[in-house]
Image (cartoon, rainbow, N blue to C red):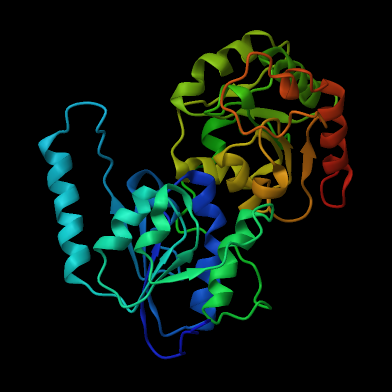
Length: 351
């Protein structure tokens, strides 16, 4: 049975450890809980790589970073010591409510350690993680967007469904565009983010190069290519095939700097990856390329975005590898260009 929170002060622990996009998807749940229960003290347990997204968030009282321990190699003593300190901290501070937004074994570990009379999450979650919960909410429609699935738990706890869905970030932008682009270059920005962790999510480098040239030559946009250090080989291939100039920042920006760049962008063109969700959270219109995954579940949330995908019988397959990933290799350049033109033609986005 639904046991709503009271408006009185409560200590709440949100557990959403990863990944980049999933942490962003959970932000409206944080906002809904804080707006409905303003006297509550909310702590978020998150992997340290994503803590910068949350530290300083106006709706959060504390962020507890989970140190990354790589059990695939010899564990370092410092890693174990940091993990031990966090476990001790968790055991010393009881909570009135623990909410598991992850639903995996790695979050169940922390749910089990936490001291709380109420441990809430969805029933039937993967890896048996639901077994450590004291309250198991019936599974929400799995085809619904992740933002709505997480929010459903806030509604279960008493947050009104009429509350505005908000995406505020904790981090502060740390970039001066004038430091990376010549002062005389007043062209509006287009950010391209071609990388992704799954090989099946990648669009061909040659297509990215042609798109970048077209955005620069036809629409007069200043193209910035972003990515992680792991994307540098891909972005170098793209730049090498271009005829126009582009600024390749793959592996050279922090999260704070990426926020500052995206905030200045006229549009972003991305694969299904964390920066796609970051751009959407910042209100930047996104042309999002989808292949093996389902945009209705994890696409850029909100209005003004364009989803590009081929309606193949095998898509979405949710496979990281595929011998013939036609869902993206066959995606025409013209289709992506048409989506960019729709975004640029909308009110406030004309060149």
